[in-house]
Amino acid sequence: MDHGSNNAPCRDWVRWAIGRIDADYTRSADTHLIPVEMPALPHIALYLKDEASHPTGSLKHRLARSLFLYALCNGWVREGMTIVEASSGSTAVSEAYFARMLRLPFVAVVPRTTAQEKVAAIEFQGGRCHFVDDGGAVYAEAERLAADLGGHYLDQFTYAERATDWRGNNNIAESIFQQMAREPHPIPRWIVCGAGTGGTSATIGRFARYNRHATRICVADPEASVFHRHWADRSVTVATGGMSRIEGIGRPRVEPSFIPDVIDRVEVVDDAASIAAARVLSLRLGRRCGGSTGTNLIACARIATGMAAAGEAGSIVSILCDDGARYASTYFNDGWLAACGIDVAPWEAKVQAFFANGRME
Image 1 (spheres, rainbow, N blue to C red):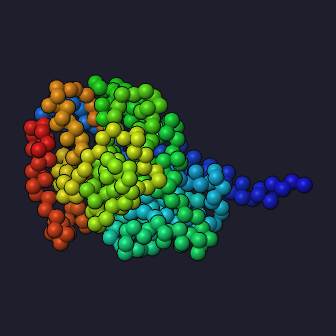
Image 2: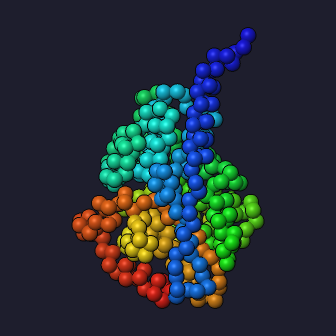
């Protein structure tokens, strides 16, 4: 008797679903690597990997694709099943895109403070939002909701580092090194990224080690996040005192996908500094970028300042994480900043001074 025959319709649907995702990937071009002019630092080159150019507008598009493929190949997702995720917004936007592609209902469990533009983007992709007042409650609520609906909780915070093939397969690290090949300093001294799940820093750090590159990895982390505390002291696993205003990075607990041992340096960045840097960089690029890109820029500026002081030459690569249009009502809204008590003016002056004289004070 063929005991596997009952699974034939399910296997047929999984084969179809993977084919749909693969076709979408084949239609997609890679994201650009943008040089950022720093005339005051002629021997140091800064580049931003433009992940905002993905179809869903953020770095999380790569993660969402990997999470769906991982779940499908593990047999966790079936035809018609409701997909649930805990997210601060961008991952959910990308996952809603893939869920719609596979004709699956999608529910995003998000903090009530999530930018309205992200909520609208999730709904545009066919998903719906389930709001929680406490950002730390998203995990348990997503798990509960998936169980109640007979669905599947994708759980980006657990599976981000293992769903992505860190050895290659066009992950973000492989793409960066390929695109740097003809630059004056093709092997970056530093790659700087934030940590939300921790999957990106894990992928880049592992890839660099696997390929024996001298590149070091820096995580740019909001002050309120636990990641920088855990990196310095492994016994610290939670942070109290409120959430960061920088959506997409920084967490109150150490996520399973955060791998501290592949990280060489952590830069702690004030929320006002992140927002100010995003606003200044947006003017220099002629397009808006999100707050986590600003966090990255502050870390890059500190690294570049130290390299210049030591007489070092080389390249720094970071990530333009998402489209700043998603934050028109928050980071780029002076009224919102005032209501939150965030004064970005001093930091905007510091970032502008960095570009003028090559030093981050």
